[in-house]
Image (cartoon, rainbow, N blue to C red; front, side, top):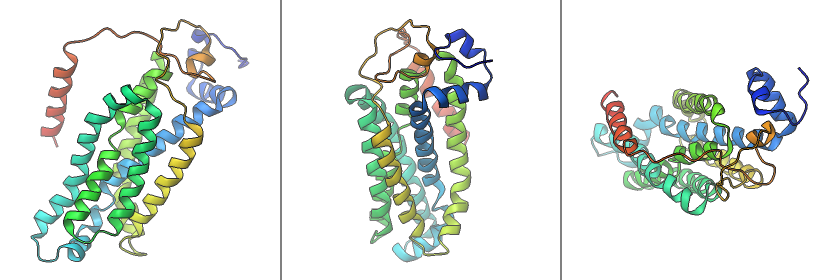
Length: 261
């Protein structure tokens, strides 16, 4: 099938995944770059949860040698997760107020800074605070989902959701391996490297990422190119009616997931 532009929405969604990818790469490379960089950001942020897991005994010995090892390890690991939880609660409403792009960029800047600070922590409390700061900056999954809703056809959201889940799970899985391997150079080297990688992502997103929230008017275009991305602005696809059961249901599911850990 010749991938001409524009392609009607129904014709576009009749294509296979790879055909749709090549179509997007050909006609909307900036859209592909935006989503790819954001997924890499999610991957790096969730690697951060487990990157210090194999290094915990050595960090405890360095930062708090006289403290109970179990309590110290719990503080080190839980601080990042607590920050992520709080960040997730704040980042979504904040992005509705100020926009998606500022929240992404500010969060990534804080995330990179937190790694450089953690690498120079002087005791366990300072290390935990810097890790909590990084976790809070990494709590931007609600903003990423909102960005996808702003910029995507509803039929594409399940595919993007799968990519998001893959990024999160792969990041959690490979974090300990990468952290342990990098620590062979120096104990703090994984923190410095992740701070550097986050800084590079920040620069790339600064020049690539466009704001998606400033125009949320209903759009009924049938252009698949515009359903993927508008070259100047993004347009909201549909008005979602309020759902009074959304928050109770989400809270219950979160509680079930927490208890299942």
